[in-house]
Each structure stands twice: as C-alpha cells, then as structure tokens.
Amino acid sequence: MHELKLKLDSSDKAKIFKMHKKEGDSVKKDEAIFEIETDKNNIQISADIGGIIESINVNEGDEVQADTVLALINEEKEASSDEKDSENKTEEEMVYKEEPGSKTVEEVKTSGKINEGGKFDIAILGAGPGGYVAAIKAAQLGAKVALVEKDKPGGTCLNRGCIPTKALVRSAEVYRILNGAEQYGCSIDGISFDWKKIQKRKDRVVNKLVGGIYHLLDSDNIELFNGKGTLVSPDTIEIEDNITLNADNIIIATGSESASLPIEGADLPGVIDSRMALELKELPEKMVIIGGGVIGLEFAFIFAAFGVEVTVVEYLDCVVNICDTEICQEITRIGREKGIRIITGARVNKISRGMDDSYSVSFEKNGNEEFVSADQILMAVGRKPLLTGIDADKLGLELNERGQGIKVNEKMETSMPGLYAIGDVTNKIQLAHVASHQGIVAVKNIMGEECEMDYNAVPSAIFTDPEIGEVGICEEQAKKDGFEVNTGRFPFAANGKALTVGSGEGFIKIVTEKETNRIIGASIIGVHATDLLAELTLAIKNKLSAEEVAETIHAHPTTAEVIHEAALDVGGRALHYKR
Ligand code: FAD
Image (cartoon, rainbow, N blue to C red; front, side):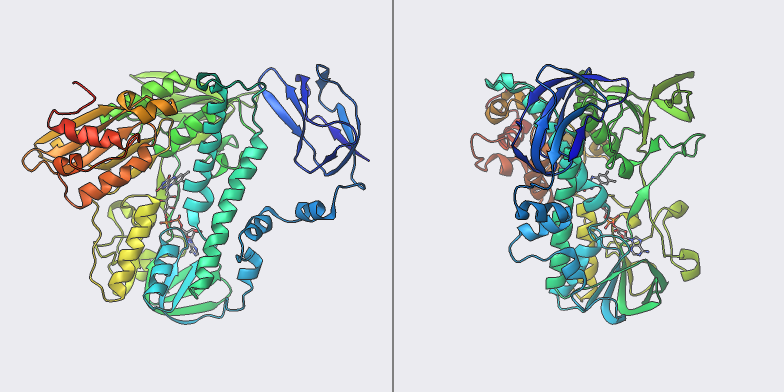
C-alpha cells in the first residue's frame, strides 16, 4: 500500500481546500486528488503513483502539515494495463506515438544509417534552427548532407530558448486569464497552478518538436552524427570517437551560450542562467534578474505572473533598449503595474550570499551604492558566440572585432573558401529566424544560386505581457540614420477585436520615409503584436508605401486593423482615432 504524503516545508501549514476523488476511485499517476490552500497559493496534490484509492485520511477544511499521510493508494489494483503501460513510457515516447506514422527518437536514431563517416556535399556543424534548416534546404536542392550535433537537434531555440519560454508564457497567460475570469462574466473558484505540471507541459511541447525534427531529417535522408564535432580544416570535421567527415563545403552553425558578468559572486550556486531558469524545480519567492534585455524581461513577466517578487536591474537607461523609446517606456510602466520592480541605469558590481541562503546584488546608481536581495539570481546579460570545436587561430579563420563571433559576408561566406557560418555564432542578429534564413542563403550560394542576406526587414518578437513586435528601424534610429520621417499611430484601445479579447493596452507606430512614404519601420506593443509583424515585414521587404497598406482591405474585427489605421494615420486620416 502506498502512502500519499503531503510535501511541504516543515514550517508551512495548509488546509484541505477541495477533494477531487473519493475512496474506491481509481487514480492515474499525476492526477489531482486534493487541492490545498497555503499562505502563498493553492496547490494541487496529485497521485505520485497510479492505483485505487483505498482510504482518504482527511476531510475538506482540515488543517494539515508536512508529511501528513493524505491517502493510501493500492497500486496492485491498478485500473487497466493500458494505463500502466503509458506510465512506464517516457514522455518523449508517449508524445511521438501520438502522431500517426511518426517514430520514436530511438527508432529514428537506430534507423541504421548513422555514424559511418564519409564524404558529403555539405556538412553542417550544429543542428539549431540555423543548422537543421540549412540541412533540410540542402537536401531539398539535391545535396548529400551530414549534420553534426552534440546534443538534441533544435539547438538553443527549441530545447532551451524560444519554445520552452513560450510554453511558460502561455501557462502564465492562462493563469492570468483564469484569475481575471470575472471581467468576462465567468466565475471560477479555487484557481491555482502546479509548477511541476507547467514544466511537464513545457517539456512535452519541446519533445514533440524535437521528435518532428528527427523525423524531418530522416525523411530527407540527412545523416545525423550525434557527437561533438571539431573543425580540423575547411573541409573536414572530426567527431568525438574518431569519425571523420569530408565535405566540399562546411557550414558552421554552433550557436551561442549565456554570457555572465565578470563580477564577484557570479559563480555562486543561487546564480542561474536562462537554461537553468527553464528547469527550476520550484519557484523562488524573490528573484533578481540582472539584465533587462529581451530574455531578462520575458522571464520577469513569466515569474511575476506566478507570484514571484521580481526585480530587474538594468545597466542602460531603459529595458529592451533595442526597441522604440516609447515602447520601452510603455513596457516599463506596464511591468511596474504588474508588480515587477525595474531599476535602470544601475551597474551591478557584486553578488554576495547571506546567512539565510539569500543573495544580495549590489549595484551603483547615480553614484550611490545600493543593493537588492532575493533567493535566486538570474543572470541575463546577453549571449556570446559558441566556438566549441573551432580553433580559429589554428585554422586561420577570421573573427569579428574583439573575437565576437565568426566574420562573414552577406553570402554567409567566412574568410576561408568553402567554409560558411550562420546563426548566433556570426553574432549578427541573435534570433532563430535569422539563423534559419542565413542557413538558406548559405546553402543557395553553395548550390550555385547567388543570394545575399538583407537585414532591412528583420522582425523581432518579444513575449512580454503584452507582446512587443519591432521590424525595420524605429523612429529615433531612422532619424539618426539621416531619414526624414513621418509616423502613423493607432492605440489598441480603439480596436474592436482588442477590446473583445480584453486587452486594450498598447499602440502601434509605423515609420515612413517622408519623400517616398515607403514604410521603413514599425513598433507595436499590444495583444497579438508578434503575429502582426508579418504584414509589416512583407511591406518593408517589398518597399510598400503607407498608402498601399492603407488601400488594402483588412478583415474586421481583427487586431490587424491597427496596421490599416496606423497606415492611414501617416497621412493624418485614421478613421477611428483623432490625434
Ligand atoms: P543554436 O540554436 O544555439 O544551435 C547550435 C547547436 O550547435 C546546438 O544544438 C549545439 O549543441 C550545437 N553545437 C555547438 N557546438 C558544437 C560542436 N562542436 N559539435 C556539435 N554540435 C555543436 N530567438 C527568437 O527568434 N525568438 C525567441 O523567442 C527567442 N527566445 C529565446 C529565449 C531564450 C531563453 C534564449 C536563450 C534564446 C532565445 N532566442 C529566441 C534566440 C535563439 O534561440 C537563437 O537565436 C537561435 O537558437 C540561434 O540558432 P543557431 O542555430 O545559430 O544556434
């Protein structure tokens, strides 16, 4: 008989708030049995094993404490063998089997073609969104392709970046909507979250996508070599256990890693990077995030949504300083309104550990020494190109200034013939879609199709709450670059769809070149901002004018109407807004 015990800190007290099961019910592993109320929040207590509930030792309203035996579960009498089977499988296996016709990771890995070495048209070092997309494109164009990856395919983006963070963003959004259900005329009692389940969902999303990549690589006959590769010459890669690959062309796509500040205390155990932040077993009460860039701010909104007391300490005068100034001001205002403490113009110079396992971050602001304490510190001060397996000096490979990444031209060629580099390792713009596009450009050039990167219309999506989207150049940058500009604006508060969704915060700003009225940039903060970028990216890429966008019919009611109205407003003729 299995005892389901309450896991709490020994000092914490709790009350049984709700019971989802009764004696005699069958229960699956991880299925909720109780909901308890603590000082901090409500927590679901789930079965740690599947079976039949033999007895329940508590009632609703009972006070309970750590180690109370809440229920006895008889695992012998488990409901059905199917359920037992599914419990024994790894999450990966369960997820891949959901897709008809798809294979498990192991099935794909052991499909028989792997790790033989040999000669290829194109070999790619690193299977992030740069490397694996380049591999697929190359295979589509008829090349024999090898892809070398020391970890799982998908790279930072899929395994420890874009996708897991956005899965957490979604859980935070669902939790926020549930808590605000009253405004939609809905009542929900006892709203709570279970961090472990949120993490599991995140992992399932990641695993499903990783499985998809294995499947794609397999279908395109791309040979995946699992191991750390070393570039020994512009046409040779050696993999860990002496496998040698030769290729007419090699593409370096080794990505980047978290940077850290060279300050005292940066290596203390409570100091984590974005990768560790995604794996937190439990939420801290207080967190200091050093760095208010895109990654730091996304985490700030995620953790704050789940009740963590978050402080962001930023060196510059504003957070997400890659954005239009008005957007920076708006997200700072909204962040503060949501309880995030944002300190700007602050130079962090030391992290120290207190007696009670708390940490203190000291910083200088306006000439004064100040500090803020927390039980976890997230270092989010940017990412640096990863040159593992690439000895640039030995190879004679030219790097960017101060060694910051591999130097490339617009065709993604390095200083060495036949050797290309793409993605974060080039330190151009560290975004997944840029890495993928650079990969396609590199492959097209290798395969004889002249092609160059154009960085004029690169969209940036920031998943704060509300979202931010930027593309092209913002108003200040345009002026700095010598453009005479016009702008068109529109608030989400005047957009019907935004109000039906319940998100009237934010605005859009379109920047045009005065002489031609051509759109050269756009900045958006508001609901769906990241999805709205697509139309503006297309407009900038194709040199469309504000009139051409304004003459285009936009569906009603959609948030895309803010683009239509802002384009009209460039000429002072917005229909639903007076300046
Ligand atoms: P990576 O994705 O880093 O892949 C490089 C791969 O190379 C890795 O799998 C690595 O294991 C492998 N590798 C390295 N060296 C070797 C070697 N010697 N041998 C074999 N394999 C090797 N970007 C966005 O566009 N949108 C977002 O929302 C977003 N969110 C992010 C959130 C976080 C927390 C982080 C950290 C990043 C985020 N990014 C986002 C950035 C994005 O993840 C990167 O720009 C993108 O992953 C870069 O792709 P890449 O292919 O150049 O490198």
